[in-house]
Length: 56
Image 1 (tube, one colour):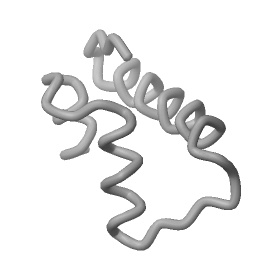
Image 2 (cartoon, rainbow, N blue to C red):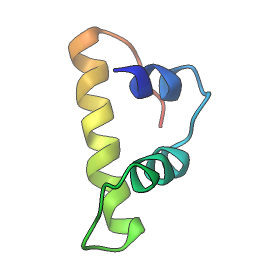
Image 3 (cartoon, one colour):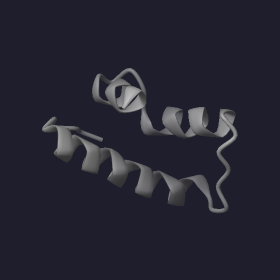
């Protein structure tokens, strides 16, 4: 939720979030272009659940 709020407040972009995940030892077996899509969809899901409008 902390990083969701950072994206919601435009303090962090999706590529920055992806870099943050990689720095914290989260590995991906696909290219970054393909990984951003599910991350974006998950953030949109969270925004729907908490009732905030997210523009990413």
